[in-house]
Figure 1 (cartoon, rainbow, N blue to C red):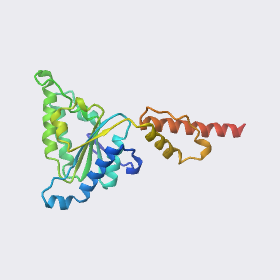
Figure 2: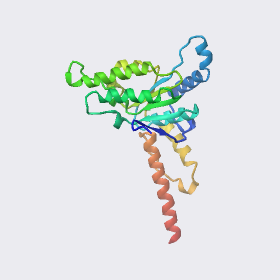
Figure 3: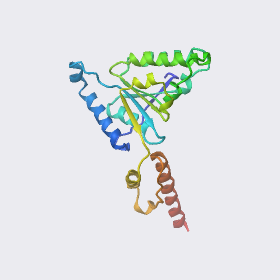
Figure 4: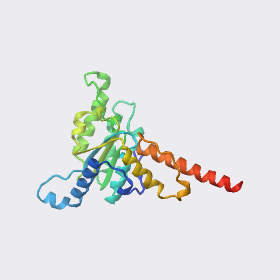
Length: 234
């Protein structure tokens, strides 16, 4: 396996992802386009295959990529940004080109997390940033040549840090917002339903992300189970 990426094999369902209404509708539209892509292409209508996921940390961006890959029965290739980005002049752009070359014949979902680290806006008049300019140009060229059968997804918590030309290449942009109290209550109910009622006493926290809520739920349920076992032993 290449050091530039790894294959994710987790099985996340679309039902496992908590979408806000706007994102849910956009994902539904994307999946319908993909399902009927042959008839759309017959009429020379473009089929979207590039999605930019942005917004609050811990609200489902990575889970969305995993769920879409599973739903479409495609391999999910997650880019290893630590090995893509190099301090050596010209190496980062070459690594990106090598990555796209490796997966160009794959019918896969290619997922860039922390995309802003590759596409940051820089002062291109500053000669110290000529490397980042080469990187952005390499990404633009390779995105434009992405095979129709592949899907490119990128996630960022800082969309304002990404070069505008890169942002424009993504036909679909999904904004992940902080969950409302009602959404978090639904999430608490969903996750807690898996456990016996005696273990689900929990102080519900709000104004947090889904990831933070899940961590809180798991920690509390585990503690409830452990305490019940200790009580039985005594």
